[in-house]
Length: 129
Figure (cartoon, helix red, strand yellow):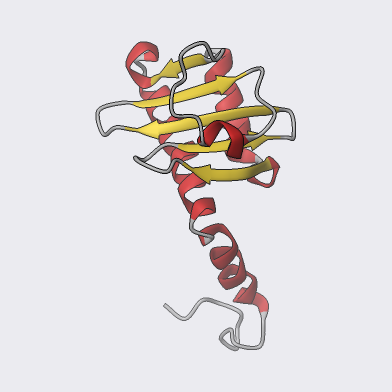
């Protein structure tokens, strides 16, 4: 397994380390910072998912405002070039994790899941469906 796939799996496993989530002003690209150390973006074009790292960037919001990336240092990884089922699954999971963060769904879902043990649960603490 390549290092980028392992790294993307770690990002999915530790979503609390993903911050500064900022969608592009146009399109489906999502910019983010991981572990307060590196700035990334991911875009799902339907045919491929591409993950970019901006090693010199200090802010995801700053990179999200860039309209011309010419001259900006970046590294690109894509499901097309990696061409494995694992790469597609991992990048898709990361993209979905970021979309949830963009719309606040991660917080909403955590709030719902925290109710599992609350007084609103069924008498035997099972989900009633």
